[in-house]
Image 1 (cartoon, rainbow, N blue to C red):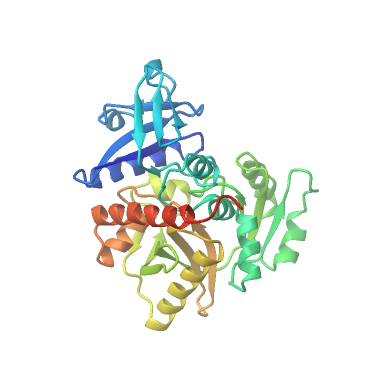
Image 2 (image 1 turned 90 degrees about the vertical axis):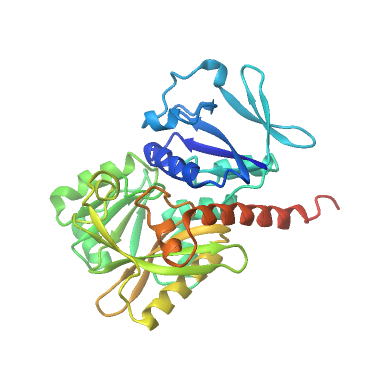
Length: 358
């Protein structure tokens, strides 16, 4: 059996979501193939080896109150990498699955650590992870590939802040979305309809990211597409998010049990379905994804399709769209986890065959 490092928690505002994802993955994991080696990352960034898996069922966040002897780190020996703990345990690691969401989890940092330690890992590598996490850079890649996305303006901390009226004129809409450039789960996102709330929305977004985006809001349906694979990815059936809130906010996603309904499969005609699936695969390839991604779309009443964002490691909670879409497409949750790990080995083998000397 393979020893699977499962990372959860983390320093980002999506800490609790990561723990929920990890719990669901561990429940679905095929224990005849994989032995989970669980590491919970506290909000301070400290790694703790969780020997008793049941601990995760009793907490919704990881604080620095765990046994100090359980503090752990990855160590690369010449022949293999292992998890090393304060009290002297050294556990060889065969493959890794990070459920860390948001910054320090989906942004290429942890992927870089795995690659330095030569550990196969589920999901995209450094560049694709970093590109997808930064909404500004992601949009620039989409524009280069002529993939449609909504118009936006990017602000940095040193930019002069535009007035609400100036942004409305530039984007052609008096309804706007203000969002952190590097954050997920709709954290820090505001829907703005007037000058009164505009400044507060900018302030909130800057609390979570050094750069922020101001996007034109469009009347639309929200469609999601799950993608699976490496060089020849495939798309699942589509799903539609029908939020009962003003928009699909963090509260609608994770707190309010009635915050949204999911239509799986989405009620769309075959032509629109095919176009969205093709665009999802194009987007996946454009930024060099591996393993998995969920591509989120806006569909206007006129039939115009816009890519909103791509998540290189979407949620795997009990209400998450990604596993539900693949279940509807014929791949049950346990088989999906196993396939993702197989894809991790395949992607690792491609890199391992490259020359490292000249």
